[in-house]
Image: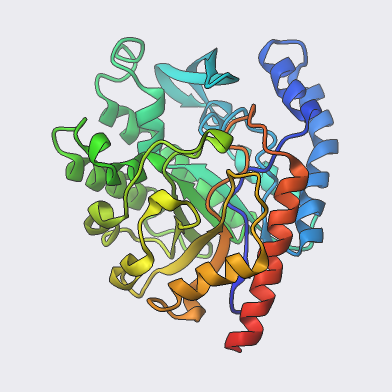
Length: 353
């Protein structure tokens, strides 16, 4: 089907879901009660996406303290803290001991629950090993566990590979790896922080390729964004050109690229991507309170179709609607944007049938 619709992963969390996550972090709710109460909440976000008409849905990542913190739900070796980030209370994990798998197949179990509550195909987002290395290792607290950041990244590869295989075996349609840290290497200011920014990009791609090596039977997607901060905007700016040489070596099926935001550069870069990649086109703004109209969305897609064939395009928002558990995008806003995404896809299917 042309112009399939999907989400990037996270969906806005009602206040009771935020409170439930906080209560677990603070030890006020044990694991069994957390799962029981979350099991009653997750079907709502699944059915909301179904009603909007989205083809490939997620569980909203409501069970996750953050989109990177899921690794600490699978492995021991992390310390948990809470800090204020742009006025929002967020949990933060740091690796402080060598990691050991405690709860393998965690994401597959979450996927199994979602499959029981939807008739749609499902996707699950995983953090890339490079992203985890950048966010969860630091030279002071982590040095006794892993001497270098790259040592930590290497240790994550087999863990994420096992999770990916479990997702495949569970019948998940799409495994989406997230890596905004790779995407930030498009920004000249960020690149200046590294001695060898191109080497960083190559290291990221190498780790991802090792995770997925030989894994078949599941669509592999890489989502790139410039660190979505919700209403606060984003961190990095610049077109995808600087990381294109590294992306050319990625052994994935799809690249999911944000283009609704003004800092992403123009779409001409799509013509330079290898044709073996399908393109996930970010054409719905996940940050602004303004609701993208179907006409605005179709206009963004038509512009992209100057450089890539319609058979390669899936459409989705630029990023998740709730990159952290404290994000404050309203659920109704996300629903209306997704509904218009679906209406735009219907218009485009008729136009390009």
